[in-house]
Amino acid sequence: MSFVPAFHGAGTRIGEMATRPFDALAVLVVLLECLPLAVRRRWPAVCLVLVSLGFAADQMRGYHLVAGTALPFALLSAGAYLERHRRITMAAGTALYVVFAVALNRVGANERTDEYVTFYLALALIWGVGAWLRSTRAAEAERRLRVAEATRTAERTRIARELHDVVTHHVTAMVVQAEAARYLVAAPDRLDATLSTVTDTGRRAITDLRHLLDLLNPDHGTGGEDGTGPGRAPSAGDLDALVEQTRRAGQPVEFTRVGEAAVAAGSAESVAYRVVQEALTNVLKYAHGSRAEVQVRYGEKEITVEVGNDGSGSRAAAVGGGGRGLTGLSERVAALGGEFSADPRPGGGFLVRARIPSGSAS
Image 1 (cartoon, rainbow, N blue to C red):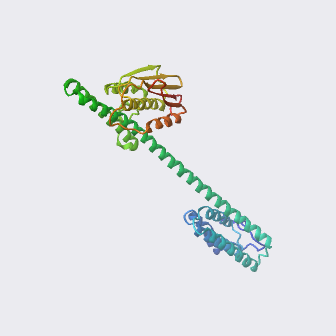
Image 2: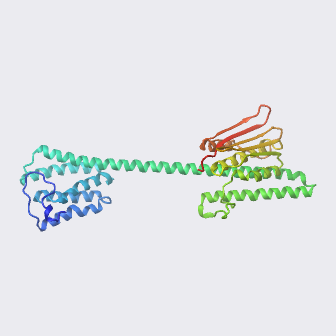
């Protein structure tokens, strides 16, 4: 626009200086005002200095070019992208503006002091807008950083819970079975069956651990196309295998299933599986041999799980725990908007209850 004759003299005018005809020097002034804008984000201070020099030459020579509008853009960019020496830049800019105003009046601008002050305040406002944009961008970056950190923490916590469930359950079952094998030396057939059970339990533990590795590293490998490989998360449909594995560890379990799982049960199925797994693990550890009952009821919008025992068994040897599993289950169920409880029974034993909403596939 500055090179179009119809726009000559149509730019910013400070004072009463007559407009000078467009000449060769005006071309250099236009380039000095416009080209630095290309680096206004990478080198905002350099851009501001060059554009300011071009603007000063524009006004002192009386060209009044449209390119003078580059000054607000350079000032806004400096306020938004300048990282260091911001106060020094503001102070230096104010001092140079005073020098510019005095020099401009000496060459015949004849501008009033209040007009200079008004123009300065307009420039200060533009700088302030840029500074506001900078602070907003910094606040957004900080918010994203906090969200990313919270997401990483939540993911680490989730994987830690999965690892706790997998290792605790399978290792507890293997310990109980290995303890029982000591007393079966005189019965080779039963000993062989028990050791086979230990082997199967170990293989299942490895399969579940591979699934956790897939969560940590998506390139590690996934399950088959039918969704039955190690990449598939456990669901309530795997409860039969879980109960059978617990029975083979020498734990009597009565399993009752009512209804069918909803198509869009989503995470609720996995949480229901983990509730049963952790509860049966605790029975193996703290009441091995007691009669356990597992009831799973599927509703239209929720899954209800109850796992209890009569407390008549004995504590398994060499198996410890710190209650971390039940705490993790409570947090999992609460995350889906459900209810969880784990309380002693009045007549002895323990009862774990969970109501898990399943109306969302999230």
